[in-house]
Length: 227
Image (cartoon, rainbow, N blue to C red; front, top):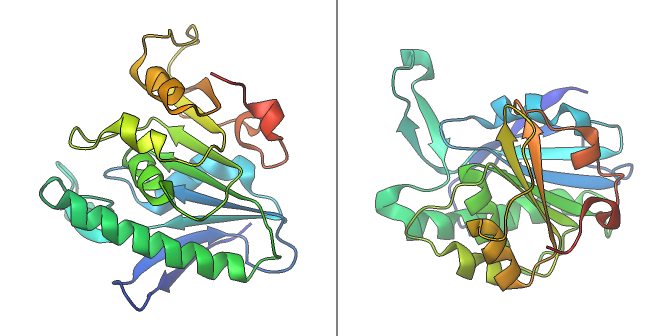
């Protein structure tokens, strides 16, 4: 399946590039919105999500709309990546993210059959962007995957999770070897339970996301259990 790029320019916001695997249209049965991490481009995230590419699945990978951040020790031609938020401009940047994703996702879903399921994956800083966008929002979605999630200290993760709809959450962490399940004392586990969200905690090895974890054909009941 071919990776293509486009620029979306909402009237109330600066435009940003996005990538897609698949084409919006009447044959799409599931849409994935995938938000990249810090010092990472959206195109770099595609390799980890290859298992999702089917003729009936549409992957949307937007570039963060905030100003670029220098990448330490990088070659000049690869010295900057867009970012979802900057430490000195957290509030305005995240408000911008909400507006941008609202309009981008509405634009994409309008070209797909009515009621097409939507799932969201946020990697690293993209997990914060996903949660900020979904908190108190009108979009319905099948599941939210928080992959090696990072939440800045200035944001209350517990409060943010409490503002999410009651849709299932999968917490994915990367490890080099199989480890035991998280304990009840793990911070994000406590926060998810406090928020009353159904969730599942999964470890993946060497940044590999298996079809069993992410496949759009897997039902919420198969993927998720109450935490």
